[in-house]
Length: 579
Image (cartoon, rainbow, N blue to C red; front, side, top):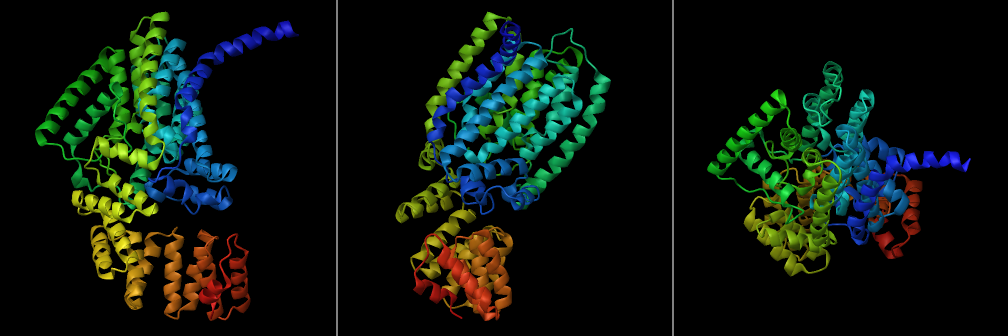
């Protein structure tokens, strides 16, 4: 029996050898991320301060994940992974980073399998996966918990590529749908498959089924358009998308060439490369060069397919949605968006090398150099201060990073340094609602109410739907005794931030002060549902229930206050829950 099993084990190892080696290499390169902490940019909104995710997996979480466009994203599968981590490990940042690390290793193995199948060359699959695993553009997605969506999407993306190469078309569509449910970064996949139909990476003698491929690509194109519309709706609802009049093809062309440059020379990895104006002449020259290169590449693909043209078209198709033609967010480019474009380009270039030892030697050497560059820059993502300091070293005129650095100082009690960072951000971007709001909040805490109102009104002038500014302005007005003016801002804060327990609590308390206990009760019950550990919310809910005649409900709310792990003193409960 042992003799009969040995050949089977040998065949299994032979089939799994390259993917396992690539995955092990990915783990080795990024092993230190297990010691990293959460970052103060997005990790709070996506994980540790998100009131839904931090409760862990539940039926409510699943319903919310598939119906929300929270933070401008439709990413239900990614929300589920974050919630699963919370259920399994709590809010231990090391555990969340280990999940990212495992997903990166899995994506690397799937990359190896996919390109081995697409090219018919296992050495090409291995070389592509090794460079995919080690390129410095991966730092953001592995070392930044909030960017897990790229990793989850990449796993399904490479799975879909493998299924297409294995001629399992229905599986391809299913995996493509799952990739889109993690993040719309995989949107151009049907166009890539169309490219591979006419310019395959497989050997010249491989069979092609163009008519059958086109029939299967039709539903993929429908999915692409549907999820593209959903992604635009999500971004627009979050205020991250610039109006159509802001479309700038010249700027997009400059960004596209910048991506190609960073693929070859990936130094200066930063959490945010700020958006800057592009001179008209520079944009025109970049657009002209891109048009010439694009026409030449498409001509080559159509008339006489070449690997260089195929690789260029692969990268350009995946970069087109993120190059800024339709500007989303405050960044010009993002290193993480090279995650998928670089893989196809690498495979095409690897096929140009002589097969066998030469190809492997060049590929291993390139991956080794990339891993050195990655390790040299990896430490810049180990903490919030490290990542923000590095971003400012690379570009001092970075208002969003200055705001986040100021928030970090504020949390540490360094108010003077926080104010300096916020003021620098406002100087660079006078319409920064976030910086103005934070300056107003600090002024209010210091008792400078007139100054606080000026900053907060400025924040709302720049961004009328900015819930934190409405909430802070309402608090300032209440401190002045002007509850009639404060209540509309509490109402706006609760409307624009429906998942904010603080907004619900403030709105409920204001309604109660205006002797509207029934309405207050609804808001306060929502507040304790969003944050069951908030003693003030439970105590205020006890007051609202008592005022509306629900004596038993009031007593129950008071009991919940006393049952909290760090139960407040009796005087606190009496102050906030007395009728």
